[in-house]
Amino acid sequence: MATAGQWLAGARPRTLGAAISPVLVGVAAASTDTDIDGAYAVGALFVAFALQVGVNYANDFSDGVRGTDAERRGPVRLTASGLATPDAVKRAAQVSFALAAVVGLWLSIAVNPVLILVGGVCILAAATYTGGPRPYGYAGLGEVMVLICFGFVATAGTAYLQLDRINAEAWLGSFVTGLPACAILLTNNLRDVETDRAAGKRTLAVRFGADRSRQLYWLCIAGSFVAVGWLGALHSWAYLAIGAMAFALGPMRLVRERSDPPSLVRALVLTALFQMVLASLVAIGLFAS
Image: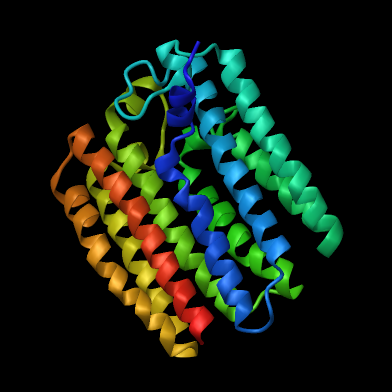
């Protein structure tokens, strides 16, 4: 039986900023045009958080039963390590998705029932990242779906709940949050490139190779600052986010210079921290505008 601490570690709490950041920026983007409904904001945060936890447990289950995690080096894997049964991990993922669905349904009915379809697609995408007969994470599409779901849908969708439309700030904010989320996944897959290749998991890092994946990581970080520049052109206080560059230099250096798993785990953690700092500074700037 896994302990509570091991279940918490299995949820990969260091990646949960990828759920918080887009909601924070989406709410701030909406605040430039309207007063904020706190209940909708909290609901959006809960949905994003539950989806992130769900996809982490679903990934743990699917990779564990496929044997992909057998030689994986990094945070604890509940299924592969035998700390929890596959069924227990699968149920944890299902409960997380169910909670996201319940709150998402409330938000959709309150704002626009069309959002039910959007939410259903996101849950399906989370469940089939490494699960199902044809997991898209094994085909190198993980980063694309992260940009869509944890960039555009989470950020612009949060703003939509407040405005009943999506403003320019929310679209630009989607790149601010989505591109660093892609960088987090790239770092994770760079760490696992050899074991993934051996297991037949053709992530983007496996397909592109380590060198080009490192270049793509840098482009993701640079692209997030390009989006900050556009936001600053609309609201000058958003330029506060340039200060997040101090938090980007460390992981960028690690990704460029190191290939050992412990260093890349460190780069992943620092990239997640950078995303949170960047999103927080953008949000402060937009709220101040």
